[in-house]
Structure formats: C-alpha cells, structure tokens
Amino acid sequence: VAKSQGGNRMVAFEQEMREQALLRSSLEADLRLAIERAELFNVYQPVVGLLADGRMDPGAGVEALVRWRHPIRGLVGPVDFIGIAESTGMINAIGSQVLATACRDFVAWQRALGDRAPRLLAVNLSRAQLTQPGLCDQVAAILAASGMPAAQLQLEITESLAAQGADIQQQLLDLKQLGVKLALDDFGTGYSSLSSLHLLPVDTVKIDRSFVSLAASSAHHKVLIEATVLVARSLGMTTVAEGIETVEQANVAHAQGCDKGQGYLYSRPLESAVLLEWLNQRQEVLNPA
Ligand code: C2E
Ligand code: MG
Ligand code: MG
Ligand code: MG
Image (cartoon, rainbow, N blue to C red; front, side, top):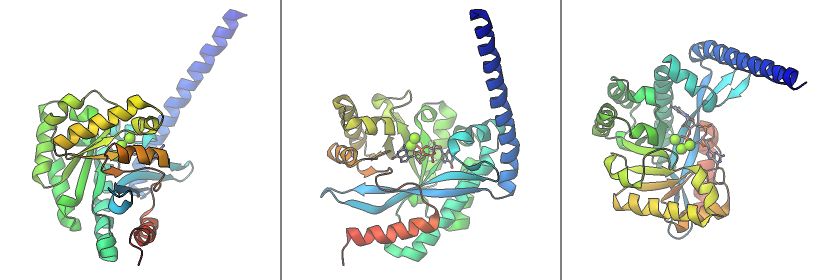
C-alpha cells in the first residue's frame, strides 16, 4: 500500500511539475503578445510623509507598479511575470515602457494638480536592466522625451542587486550622474547589512514589509527598524517603511523615525485617474480650508 501511495504521490508531483512548466511557457508566449497588445499598465501607490506632528503628507511621492490585464486569466501581478520577463530578455522592453508611462503620467499630474502633485516618482529596476549597458542612455532619453525632472525620479533596486560587482556599482554611479535618485528596496531581506550601507550610492532605504509587519508586536524588529533609521540618517539617507497595514504599524514607523510610509493603510496601488482623486481628497484633509 505504502509503495503504491508513494507511486501516486510521484505521479501527482510529476503532473504538478508538468502543469507548472506548461503554465510558464503559455504565460511566456502570452507576454510577448501582451507588449504589442498594450495589456500591461501601471498602477501607483502613494508614499506618504510621516510628519513630526503625527499628520501624514499625501504628496510625498508614488511608486509605479506594473500590472498585466490578461485576456483570459484576468489581472496578473508582477510576481507572476517579472521573473519570466527577466529570463527571456523581455524585461528591457517592459521596463522602459513602465518608466516612460510613469514619467508621462507624473508630468501630467504636475500639470493637473500643481503643488498638490506628488513630488517623487519611484520606479523599480530589475537585475537584467541594471546589467544592460544602454540603461543610462535609455533613462536619459525617456526623461528628455517626457519632460520629467531627473531629480524627482527615484529608481529602486533590491538589496541583493546592490551588493553585486563593480559593473553594477558603476552603472549606479552613472545613473546618479543623470541626477536621478536611488533607493534600496526591501532592505533587511537580502545579504547586505547596516555595516555596508555606506558603500552604496543610494539616497533612500526602504525597510521591508516583513520588519514593519512584525514591529508592532516584536521588540526585536522594532529595534532593527530603529537601528536602520539611525544608520541611514547618519549617512544622509531617508527611510521609508514598506507595507504599513495598521495604525499600530504606522505609529511604530513614526516613533522609530521613518521619514515616509507606504502601505494599504494609506492606499492600495491605484490607477492614474483614481490616484488624482485620492490626492485631491487627502490634501483637503491635510490642509482644511
Ligand atoms: P516592491 O517594489 O517592494 O513593491 C511593493 C509591493 O508591496 C507591491 O506589490 C505592493 O502592491 C505591495 N504592498 C504595498 N503595500 C502593501 C501592504 O500594506 N501590504 C501588503 N501585503 N503588500 C503591500 P506588487 O505590485 O505585487 O509588486 C511586487 C514586486 O514586483 C515589487 O515589490 C517589485 O519588486 C516588483 N515590481 C513591480 N512592478 C515592477 C516593475 O515595473 N519593474 C520591475 N522590475 N519590478 C516590478
Ligand atoms: Mg519598489
Ligand atoms: Mg519594496
Ligand atoms: Mg517588496
């Protein structure tokens, strides 16, 4: 009995693997078409300022996050297709489309909202983009074409990426030469540490959601956030607490000195038109007439 059960489990496992591989190759084929068919679009999640008096500043910034409206599967998130895009080289086309769209949208918000517009636009870069020699030229061309001010663009890289070799370091320095800002995303999850933060040419450290979500109940994680803020601040870097879902988590982030916060408590990622409404409403809360 045991043997036949083991055999059944093996069959089930192989079938599962086959289904995974099929799903992947079907998504891969669909992703090629998705770019042509304009099925990819950006959503934007507000990044709010955590002000000293306890209020929040809704205009601090937004982060662009890519989405795929698949004709059959419905909405597909980046976790399910960025990996495929990276391993097939499609990430360069997708990444430049995300950046160009985000810059155009940002400039449009500035026109529509004036001083109510977000002040910073964050866009994620993946590993394959950072190792591509033409990246800086591509970013410069997109800035020029959209009229996006370089100083208001923040490119986000993950910790593991930043710890890589000299070629990536040089690419990061070249990007900084353009006048754009750099942020270290998901800090705390990778291999770099507080002691190597000073080696990275980044302006901002984004403290990973896993720390923020535990900080309200775990003294250990609270101290880790506090230490990160102290080191980042001593290096002239600003800090963002990611994934704030509750008032308690927001209070901890504020008490530990994080400059900004991002998470479902403030807003989920929104389509551009909805973001405009959100900004208008929140600004009224911040500055009652
Ligand atoms: P990330 O850059 O760390 O972005 C934050 C992720 O956390 C987003 O997931 C966002 O929707 C989610 N999030 C924000 N607040 C909360 C919260 O309060 N609770 C929870 N549970 N989640 C929250 P999303 O949009 O699924 O993106 C996942 C990751 O995919 C991003 O992590 C980023 O690494 C990558 N990604 C997204 N868009 C792009 C892109 O255009 N290019 C590249 N290369 N990567 C992207
Ligand atoms: Mg990010
Ligand atoms: Mg992040
Ligand atoms: Mg993350």
